[in-house]
Length: 253
Image: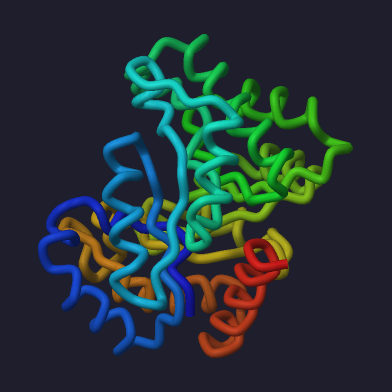
């Protein structure tokens, strides 16, 4: 089992890291991908990935931070070459719900991350909220470039998902699929091809039922896996095998 998206550099996970890692291993997690959101975040992640063999990291600037920080595609690629346990780019993308950064800066940042992904052949981890049209239009510009796309914590419409499948995207399910009011999202994941699905916690955010409202951690991914297996009408064991294979295909092929 692999948590394809967590934030181990955020509290309360960071100060309890050894116990968080042990609890992850106790439920059968074999890899944790801890996600960069800013330069400060990446500096912490460079150290965190060396704390245990199961931890890997990414480099990127979250759309919320794009108004304050900018990074070039070459800077991203240089860091990927320098740190072998940094295996992903992001999280990047567009967030027009909060608009913590102006749209133009978000778009420019997104494009730099995409260009880095093309130069390095390293997967792109995308955050998209209230920006389906714009996210797809930008990605579609690269449709013949074999861009490696992972839609993190996917909560988009089925129509958006269908368009992204045509771009060979992967989709990560978070604890949101366990929420009572997420029937539409559950139906979307029911329709998505199994070979395109990963699982994540986005911890310390978005704890799944029965821990909703608590601080999330990677070990809680077990609840998300169980719910997704039910949605896909397969055993949890098969769901874990398939999503693990999908992660390894995307990040280690």
